[in-house]
Image (cartoon, rainbow, N blue to C red; front, side, top):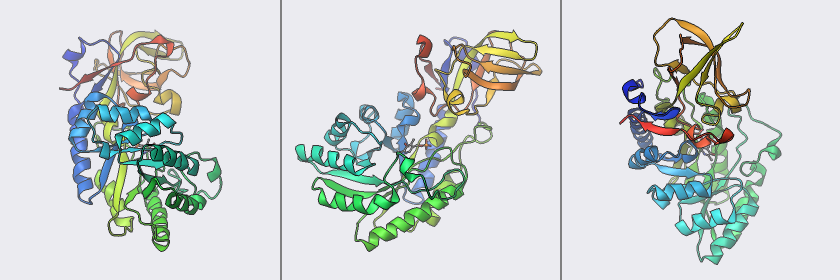
Length: 382
Ligand SMILES: *Cc1c(COP(=O)(O)O)cnc(C)c1O
């Protein structure tokens, strides 16, 4: 399903704006739900990827839970009608008010990233006469990119509890009266397209599950996080990641004990391909060596290229002229405010609309008002 841009409608809309193709989102959600159900897997959507209310509505209707990394996200999930019992909350630095919010809302689970945090959750739960269900976030020492084990430097990673500390953390959880350890949580990284990284994760998870069983630690939840990547180069040819392959990798490699449920936290793979940032060309600036297409969207609207050198496919959706090469740049006063260099585009003129594709994840949610620019609004295919 390739995104079709309704150009007549776009003519009336102030640029830049985020365009969301809800058919692509629905197809993605249907596929996720169907493929996860084949294995009885539970999926929580990582709302930090995109918290747009229209998208959240579709995601809630599809039956997904929500994975949050801040109190603001927990509040957002509750406000958008998600069942508290489908909300999980991770994050290395939860403030007291965020913990209180999660306890008061009686969410499904807090994913705990250190023993001191566990102790604070225990205290605050005790003050409320509650018991908090928690998962221990374990840093499984898996390199998501090279799929080799890192043998040193785990002290430097701020996320989760190191493997050497798992036993102490489980013992501490047993001692604390208002903490109920229900499972382990893992999250190895993002934009992972090579399934062998997930296979290595499964190996580590299996080792821990075996260890837990030997130590009579009962776990009902095995949360393997998110991180499935999308094809930024081919948003139309490959609008959906291979969810079947992804889920079956875990189904094949995880060695679960009876009563254990596998949870996933997918963000990017659910929303990236349904979104495009649509921007208007303000000026074509010809230099001696190159030409610039100066557009009205900037790094404040979509920071991924500036922040991670991320690639977004750039299309001129107004022109069918022969192609020329452009650096596509925004108006923000930073040299890094550049969406692409030497991009082949049908010849560009002032007023043309340019689409930055696959911008549904970590676009709108990472937008800022830098240079006191406005936030780009949302436009929807329906
Ligand atoms: C960001 C994040 C996710 C989602 O990652 P994606 O790469 O967008 O799938 C899942 N779990 C946790 C704990 C995260 O921080």
